[in-house]
Length: 246
Image (cartoon, rainbow, N blue to C red; front, top):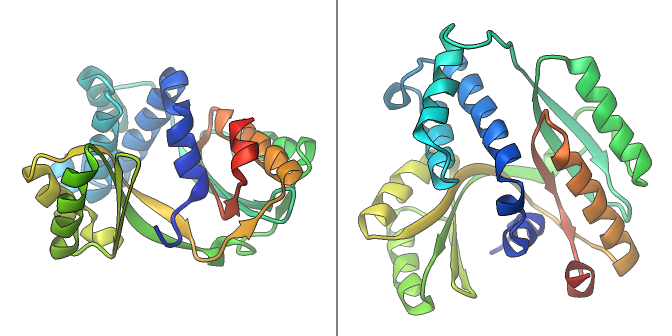
């Protein structure tokens, strides 16, 4: 897929989400709570909340957890106030890194993010330095047999998708953010096995890394994602296969 995040594909192939499911549920719950506080606590009337709930369901998050996360936004929980923060930086080899976080203590989170950049040969930079490299896009991931996925890719294009790619039993569909839900509904009605549906940041340009820089960059990205307050980590790095296998 043109411009799709190489890091997102690597994480899927490595099965990193299954290994850290408990932490992922916590991050999903925070996103649901933040979305519910931003608008109405009803997914039918709050597009951001609807997307957050759908993402949680695709991750097999229990319904009770989803309900509790929504109730926190309406005074039915711990009353935690979460602020959205974005951090920008560069990884070893010059690849851009963009980090989104939800935190109740910005100073703590900023210190934790800065520490990971400093300890892993990266550098934080001022706001706006790398955001221009990324576009907001809707991303759908569908698993199945390649022949069936090829047929679904045509349905996706007809429904308004901007780009599609089938590879190794996975169909990735890229849309404009506002077209993600209409395209998802069409593919869901066709029986597609949708595994992710989210609005993501996709790099417009990429940076090819050598093996050493790739290994260091992957370590930095993983350490950032392990931070409790961090929601997503994006990069425009392209990793050589040898580094991914190691």
